Length: 204
Image (cartoon, rainbow, N blue to C red; front, side, top):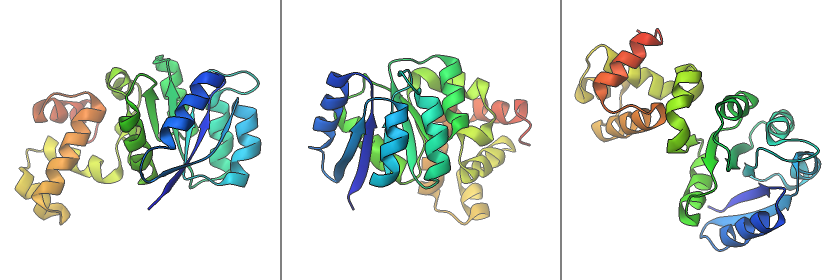
């Protein structure tokens, strides 16, 4: 399956570099690019890409406003913020506007390509530098998928992987994958911290 991606960045060199590098990645096709949020809102609906990589700080219309506008126009399009800024306010505003992820520009192109594929599949992607603050700033429902929230609730009451798998009709391997993503997205170290997080966020 080919995933189409649209790149929005006000810096020509960065935008052209990202589009060129992603165009070389297997299974990814670049649908187009834009210099700012306003241009993106005007052009993206005609391209109908699967994923949009959106910078945050841009002239005319910033990435947060453009994300909110595009989510209204194309509800199925997945938008991932790709920026140099890991500011708490930008992270929370972007996610509340409908972004499915928040990544920093210092990641290798292969990881960026994988993030595009995962975003298309509906998997949220967050840079490790912002995960901890994100978990503190947003309720779990805004960070985790409904299934991951179910798994977290069961962890919090002491259920083993086998018990969680039986309760949710999943394989133990799938449960382990869910737990790994939960810990990563919430910036937690182990199941004990996950249980405490669930209690603090009233998930019991």
